[in-house]
Amino acid sequence: MLKYPRLLLTPSSVAICAIALSLCSCATVTKPSSQVRVQQLKDAHLAFIDHHTCVEGTPATWDRASFDSEVAKITQQFTDAEAAESKAVPARKEFIKNSAKLFQRDATLVRKQHCLSPSFAANKKKQLQQNYDLFLQQQTSH
Figure 1 (cartoon, rainbow, N blue to C red):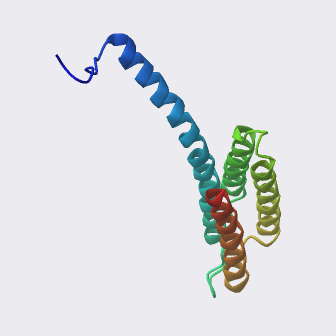
Figure 2: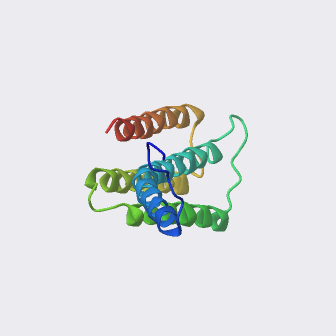
């Protein structure tokens, strides 16, 4: 006789393990998915600044329809990210809302001037990177 009972892989034990694993993975997938959304917003916002930075000595080419389409696409990303956030974590939702407002201010400035000066853009990008990075670091430490 065996001293220890054997582990039997019956259909019910496999199903129980599969359910337990899927429940555990839900808890770990939620946090990274919101971080991925915030990272995508950061990337889109910084790319927008890059795309609309004047090259010194070269006049900016302006295509209003293309600009409006780009702004609408990024605005939709912010809207979708905010909607996807749980009400259980109001800080994340608020950060996304505030970042969307910053993006709209940047878009309004570009719409008015057609481009951003290289020094303004560099300072703006540095500030945005700090904001997003600090928020993402705080989210991983909780």
